[in-house]
Length: 373
Image 1 (tube, rainbow, N blue to C red):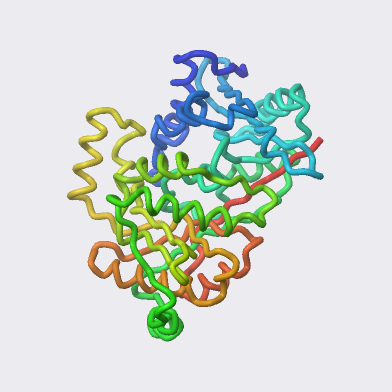
Image 2: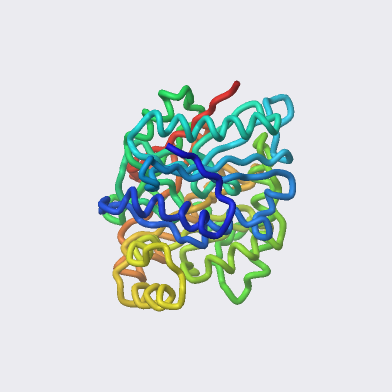
């Protein structure tokens, strides 16, 4: 077997081809968009390169066939005071062979050690935690956009190498039929009828306003996290513009308390129901296919990607108010019958309790692993 570093365009294309080869007979797998992966490793596009670095490798067998891939990375700005300087690995895919996996893991470890990194988390992303994060260990169905999907045997490959679980990430799903509507109507009535609170859905023609409100909420709601990194206007504006093709305005809700931005609940359509037809390509033909399937294909699921309320307005019912606004808005879209509630970490029991109260069921579990040396 040979590990080859990704150094040129041909290698980069091979890195993308690994998954297309390994999963070609898996009916559940949905190919990630090539451009989404490439942008992560583009120094002009990914700000994490300002304070860090990333490397990619592909693995070939003796016949020069692609049998694996992996990436390793670190961002010194994200090191947490008092903890080990940790890097990450991600975009790991491999045949069911422990020796092959070990070779990829060793390559990451050696490179990170050469940069004075004391350990590695994986599989994670060289960027946002809501994308390509965690190893799927349960619920190998309906992979969502930019969600890690993998073969079940990957769990053994990681654990046999010595990785230990540090985080369990739970994804839940609620259907309109199982939503506990009567209970939530009663719970939400108090805030929906309170003149001090109001709820608005996102409007694309007011992107600037909602981007500023999002920043104000996010930078307060997540400030307590030790790994918190504040977001700025340029970043969220770029994100909202990139999401525009998959947004339903009435699937994104903001809560205001005393005219102050207080919370948000952001949902997008389950775009993987479109991307499964595109084989990772967003070229001219791919864009035409996207528009056709978006208009004529039946999309029956939305996906909640972020949910937050600033601390001083938590536990006042704003969460239930946004959920009820979303529920009522989705009645206008009869094809949409399910809402996936994107992953919640085991460090957030309040959100787990809220999802259980909704009538949601756990559909997928991902693990984040760590290895220190």
